[in-house]
Image (cartoon, rainbow, N blue to C red):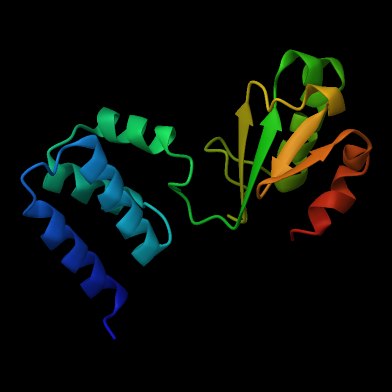
Length: 156
């Protein structure tokens, strides 16, 4: 069984030999394999991807944003808070602020303990049950968010 760094080197070796290594399809495939091997796409891995594929940092940043399954942090849980109009009318902003406060979210959107990644989305398309958040692909709405602290304890 190979160790993690050998596996990563093998991945880079394979993709460096591909004729279309800078194409979106190849870069995304490379990123996914690196994430499988390392757990997330670290700054060091992003720099190597740029070198191997010849893509710019901005292009790479855009690709990572386009594919939400690609993670730049080694977080355990992802929370998406709705910032749409209907959720905003029903205390969505207060819920977002409470999440930031309870989890001690830093400027990069990651909690101080590294367990949570918080991001926002303009609309989760669940307006009838506003306000809404998603934690690890499960939607929590309305009265479920009254005791946010208790809800978050399930994930601690």
